[in-house]
Each structure stands twice: as C-alpha cells, then as structure tokens.
Picture 1 (cartoon, protein in one colour):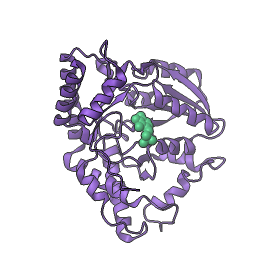
Picture 2 (tube, helix red, strand yellow):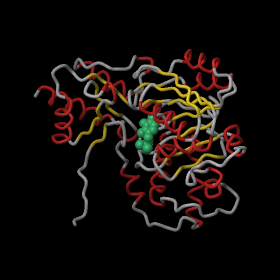
Picture 3 (cartoon, protein in one colour):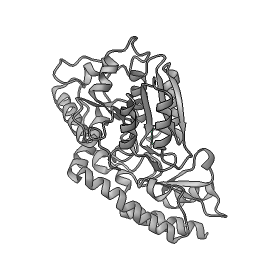
Length: 371
Ligand SMILES: *Cc1c(COP(=O)(O)O)cnc(C)c1O
C-alpha cells in the first residue's frame, strides 16, 4: 500500500464544502485524552460557541459525534415515542428521510407534501395540524439541499405552537449560511452538520434542544431504542457541572476542527457570514443568468448556498460534470429524484462561498459548455 494523497479539488456541490486550511491544520494537532481537563475545557467552549451560531441560550446545545444524519436521528430517537403522531413536511430528499425516522421509531407520520423546488406551504401545514389535533410534533427541513429551497421556519414554528406541537427542524445546510434564530423563532429541537456552511470537515452534528423538547425526552414512557443517541446518556458526557461519565470516545481531532471553525465564524460575525453567502449567491446568479442558465427555485424561496440550475439544452450532464472535475478540479452536484439529469446543484457553502470560486466555476462551465 501507499499513502493516500487526495487530489486538490474545489468543492461546489451540496457538501462537503471546502474546508478552511486553518481547520485542517487544527485537526493535525496532538490527540489528547477525551477526559483530559484541557479537552473538557475545549468541549465547554465549543458548546458556548454553538449557542452563538444557533442564537440560543439552550443549555442542551452540543455536537453529536457523527454526521448530520445522526443529528436527525438524535431528534427523532429521543422525541418520537411509539404511537406519536408527527406531521412531517416533504419537499425533497431530507423530508423523506425524516418520515423514515418517524416510522422506524414507532411514530405515525402525517405527510404534508410540496413540489420539489418549492418551500413548505404554511397553509397546508395549518390544515394538517387542524385535521390532526392529536399530533405532537411538526418536523420540517429549513434548507432543502436536494432542491435549493428555503422554508419559513419562523412561521412554521408559530403554527406548530398554536397547535400544541413541538418542532424538529433540519438546519444542516442553513446553519451559518442563512438567518436562523432558535430562541426567537422558538425552535424546540434542531440539528445541523459541520461540512456545509461551517467551513469544517464532515462528521459532526451540532444539536440543540430547548426545555420543552427536553421535558418530552425526560418524560418518555419507554426509553428510546437507540443506545448511542439516547440523550439521557449523552448528556452525562457533554453535560456541564456534573462529573463527566464515559459514554463514547469523542472524535478528539475532529472536534478541534469544529472548535476552529467556530473561532473563525465568531471572528467573522454570524450576520456577516449570512451576508457573505447572500452576496456571493448574487454574483454567481448574475454570471449564470448572463450565460442563459436559469434557476429551479423561485426567487423568494431561493437558498443562497445551494443553487439548482437547469442543465442547458444539448449539454450532457455526466460529461460536463466529469470535465469540470478532470480539467478544472471542480466538483458540482448532480440533480436528485425527478431532477436527476435535469439540474445541477452548485453549492456556495462555508469556505466554498468565495469570489475566486465563483470566477472559476463560471469560467470552467462556460469553456466546457462551448466545447
Ligand atoms: C447534508 C444534509 C443532511 C445529512 O448530513 P450528513 O452529514 O450527510 O449525514 C441532512 N439534511 C440536510 C438538509 C442536508 O443537507
């Protein structure tokens, strides 16, 4: 065997996005014990910084030692009890996965469907909740990475609370890239990922639960069937004050990476990061539109960090993406579901959301299409 040396790519797909060099070098620092006082101090700082990016005071705000999908599963494993009715909004791939989680943990999923590429319809959610007065949870994706549509999380949470439901919100692609206010919007349980707008490596899922969600977890009739994701156990490891008890071995160096990304994000300022994602989206959009390329998602629901655009007539999807990768070291994403072969998904997330990436992408795409 030989050492693996990956090619140096520019990542402009749906994630992972480019990892900032500062984060890569932070990950190369010496591994220490996961119960070492120095590590515990870093854990506490990381939790505080996550509160800042989630805009929350929730005590239970922490990174789950696994990718975004595990954050999703943490929410459903702990909050859904057998027989619970859960209204779930599906307008893309990740809403479908939420539904799968609900049924696997014994819940009854009531599906609210919207077209792929559209935002979740608040009217339909209101209707579903009024027809299902016994529903306990509303689950939806804030930023659907499979299509590039953003939904009105604030309005959806309000509707849920008016109907005595708690909310589970997928913020894997929105955290750090789009306006998101956990406390102000009264989001009860939320999960995200590190490899999208946080400029960090894949593999960690920050989550946050408020008191309302936590009391549902604590008052369960039966323990969750997941051992690894059982928050009652995980909290003993990540919880403040109480003596930390061994639960699993934290991915020590990966957490150095998350910590560094949070240092960088607080230096930049969260609102500045939201603005950077928006400004760079507009630059890319203007360039693409000048080439005659159009967007899947309507202007008002368009996610700045994930741009789904129609593949121009006559262009071969796979060939163009392969040429971008081989000739320019540039990765963009393919379409999913009904949009496979019809759209490309161009990501501008985290450290990938930079002017030089946009210049490269526009020039590479133009040259490739002309060929
Ligand atoms: C990427 C993504 C996930 C899953 O995250 P992984 O880290 O790939 O497990 C979940 N939801 C959304 C909206 C995503 O974009």
